[in-house]
Image 1 (cartoon, rainbow, N blue to C red):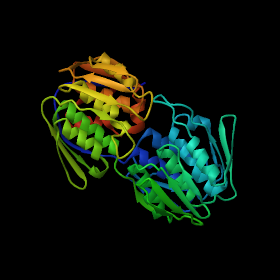
Image 2: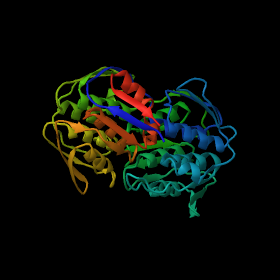
Image 3: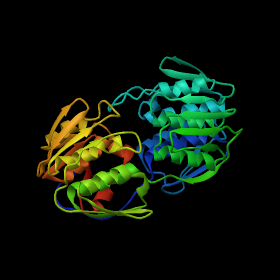
Image 4: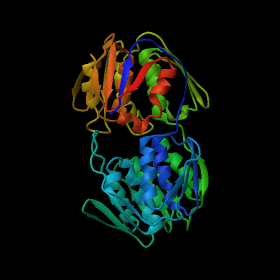
Length: 417
């Protein structure tokens, strides 16, 4: 199993190209199921989760090709097997996003329940409730969600909680439903907006994406399209956090600053000097960062996917930070590993109190999930000596060429067996 070996010390200097967003690419790949004409995508990141999703689509009868890095062509005209088996779904919760498109296009679907997750429970009850309101008959048997519908019908759906994948699943189902669907208490994340833009390019009629009420007017069919996936705002934030912790001066290219307001505000509060343009972000940091308090919240609040990275910044900050996690009930597992590196962190319920230390100490640590992996990388960059991170397959799920990009900025990072 691969590991990352990081020798800490020294600022980061140079430029980084931001990859396409994993959390936008996965639902957009599923959108290909809705049309019998090809969907051509660019700026698709080269990630394990993307490869898994394409394998899942392939076994359903979707033909795929990747002529060059970052591009994917999907042709679902031969869609014949609307089944998402356990062996693929269990490795990636986003696989549940095939449920809505399959029911809308095929009138039936059999999708394995995704189960739990290391960072907390993420139930699919809102997905099922919405699809049933649209006329789907759903039963759960032997660990599978089995759904049928002659044709979904538009309706008003009020979600009990804000759910990104639930919003995406129901939005994809509604584009081929008969009539108008209103999604209330919808997720407002930029990735939801990106999916809606792709669907509109395919011929869907969607209004309100990015607000908490989305209106979808069903159409009889969707066509093909060419679409570029948005930049990854969490990858962008991770590199910005790394500079805030380690110091230096870095320019991020192909970024979208407009999706990062909460993250940029907290970085500026920590002392980072930041300037932005349409597609670039420049950050410059010197000395220890200032401690900041934060509370995670659905977009446009501070993203839960940046909480772990900011805990690493707080670990070496000047002062005491209070970090509250309101999205997932078990997303502080990285704190125990940061403590192995010398971080002063105490946890009570969903709140972590981090007293910054001047320097961390290298040690052998283990990644527990995707964003926890990123937090350990940032900590390793500012630790004395050598840090070895086990189980970095989590990183490969969400960060494209992480060690190569950090090495280009002067960090001493290498992948070892």
